[in-house]
Amino acid sequence: MHIFIVSPENKPGTLATILEAIAQRGVNVIAGGVGAWGDNGAVALQTNDDEATRGALEGTGFQFREVPHRGADLRFVE
Image (cartoon, rainbow, N blue to C red; front, side, top):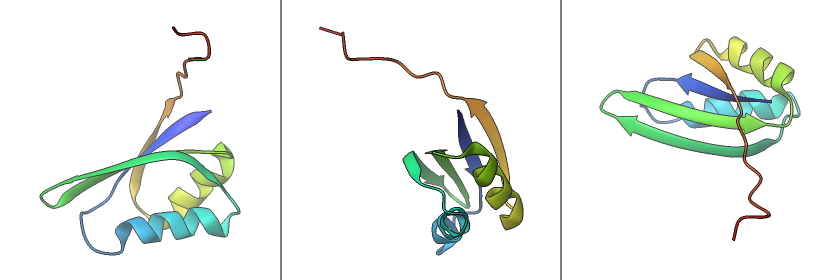
């Protein structure tokens, strides 16, 4: 499982474009976060289907990278 980090321009509708491309592939977003500074933005997403997410993002033309998800099990933390 990977986290996808997309680096789009900070402009109206960009996040919608990214999420619509993923949704059209039937992918569910499990977790995410966004940030923006000036004309730059960043969108980090974890989904239920890495392969379909990769294909969807490649189709948007936005630059992105993948990093391995390093999850933690917090069920036993006191």
